[in-house]
Image (tube, rainbow, N blue to C red; front, side, top):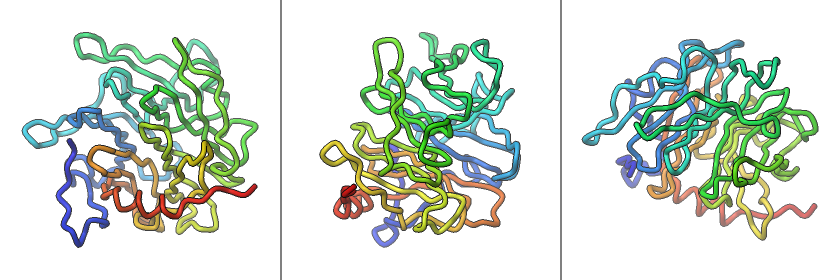
Length: 293
């Protein structure tokens, strides 16, 4: 299990994850932990946060004897712009976003790719998901629930705003056509970089431009599925700053929420943080309401 020692008085105070090892003065973001809790994958960049053309690669660290190892570059990353890793529950599939060439299309955009781990424990050659998932525009933050259903963000045509969240049901060999999560979750602003819990009934996502935002660069919101409908999103006040707050990662067994933050508008780097999630869950679930529209 992934344990963070947090005192009672500071249980809702964010803690930097692995300072000077994983969280450094560079840009680290979008963590994804294996189901065993002994591997973490994340994106890292040598460029300044928020700059045009920022290039990232996917790194990993392993926990041995209670210590996280120095991060290493994954075997499938480093040449192209790769980000937003997400490892499946069985640890054998890793989804990620990549801006790399593909035989399936001449147009290069940020698309959802996956890479499988073979019997020897090494990653094979990445494969781009089919065109029902990927569009001519950009896709972001692929996540799966325990049923294998896929959730992601996209600025494809036909959405409500700058970017919307989508759901694709897991089939035998592929995913169904994506369904927009609707205009309670999505707005005429931008919704990006989501996390879904294992049961598929709690979603946390980044939104930019909403009236409740502390930052125009993105705050984190939470919504609950009640009676098969998503509740009105609530801004998570305990962690939102004037900088970028995004890329949530739930560790449900340990009731921990990991996320990425730049802390302030002036910051040129990001770090990975953790915070106790049980109290946040109870507080926001109690206040969750459905839209009357």
